[in-house]
Length: 159
Image (cartoon, rainbow, N blue to C red; front, side, top):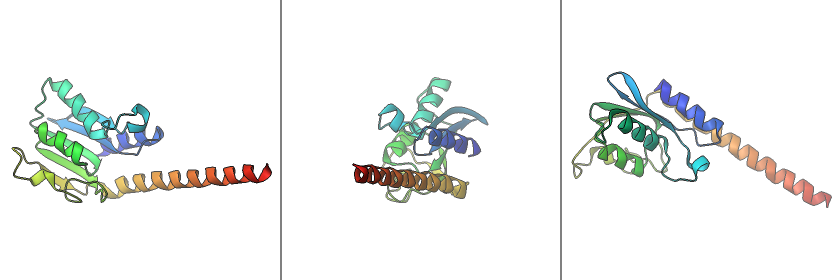
């Protein structure tokens, strides 16, 4: 999970929502990713999706059997779909996502028996570090937005 936090920090440095993910097989990281939606203008470039793509390429198989995905934030529906389709047996995540989480917050796709694959889940690993990083990012974003509004109002007053 520490490596997923490293990836989340990389996302934050790019101005992306700080979410990071790594895929581990036999104790080795075979895929890593961080959010790139703003940078790429691609709504599918979530940390999990990037890490899963890298892992599949690394082992030359779409079936990520025997792998564990570590991610700093509870996956959304799209990412849980990819986790299920990739046959990833284990998911470890940091903090919950009450807005779009699909591992218990809004839905629980990990245990849905209508799918041909279920995912064992461990949650809350380094949750405080994950949520602090997210909170700090959004706090800074709000402060910057407020500052831009103030500057715009000041320049309007001067004209």
